[in-house]
Image (cartoon, rainbow, N blue to C red; front, side, top):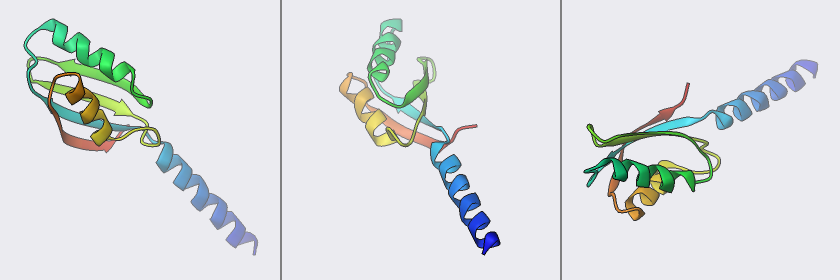
Length: 97
């Protein structure tokens, strides 16, 4: 019985740790033509609950975002960027380190 109880606790702990792991997504973004575009995207992402870090790269036309998957997701992030005037599509999404 004790082994079963310990197994359940370990399983629950792993599930919580997995769920709390930050994720990262990279988005291809259109219409970035100047430094102000990067600022506009960063300000839009500042309003998204769960976004913990962001990097806008105008040269490669990408935005890399770290986020809490309990609070947001790549679809919602792409919508926020698109709504700011820069059509965005997720090109990768993975667990953060």
